[in-house]
Image (cartoon, rainbow, N blue to C red):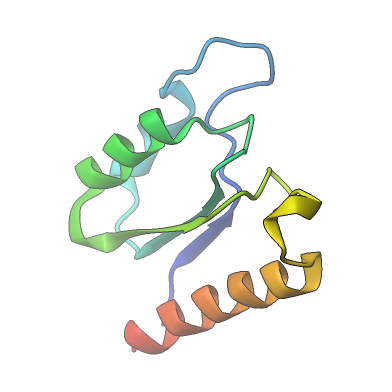
Length: 101
């Protein structure tokens, strides 16, 4: 399978107003796309990324990492280790690859 997996797609810069300009070229990509994004990622506000993924249609998939930042690090109070979270990320990518074959 050929496709693109984005692990923390940088939708906007830190301190910049959230926007979708960095995603505008994606509608030209005809490959399957996977976006793995943390809910605390300061480079991709999910309120903006979710509609982008929806507009890309069935070729785009979003996997949300609860509590993850841009590096998928979670707060200690989440009860999860970084290794557990990275296992989730790896499983999401592997599952996406398997389902696309």
